[in-house]
Image (cartoon, rainbow over all chains, first blue to last red; front, side, top):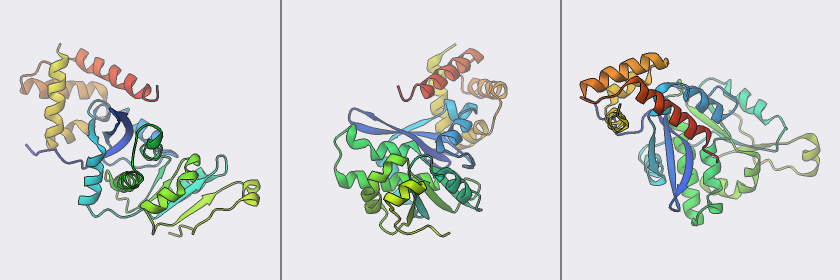
Length: 195
Length: 68
């Protein structure tokens, strides 16, 4: 019997709070490819299978940080910030069509981490550490048919969290996607992911 | 029928990478039920189709109600 104590093939799909601490729900994604427009849709597809639905793991956020620290995980190739109804899903799907590129579109675990201060007391540096670890692990979790680079599209309201994202990934590039009207009033590009 | 045995089986599977992968590859619920019953019997655990059906319903419900 081979011990299955590591988290190979497993991916955080949800973060909740219990006794003022984050609890991470892991799902066995195996070789699932992130081809659906949104992260949750890929997870939903996976949860139609018996094993991923019935056999889940729960860990602390520390386990995510440990995993991110133990493995030399690649930083994301880029981030997408956007306003709603602006074509950002088209942008993310275009990027996802590039070979070996995984696009994590609005992953709830990332959003929950960013929203953690609304649920629990968390120090700013801890929040940055959680965010970095969660994104690194999400980008690398599962085999994903050989994904070698990862792009994260945040929820629209996460644009306000740009300073936290920058602290977590100071070298990563991002772009914002807005409608023409929104662009005329504000433009918030900070470099464009060119890969 | 034993929900406790199903929980014990779950723990054994999560600790056994080969068994885990064998079960994880199954897409069909009927086939999964058959394999899970066979594997659990080898571990002297009493799991039947009803246990798996109830676990299926409970897990599906918990996932759908995750935002509530």
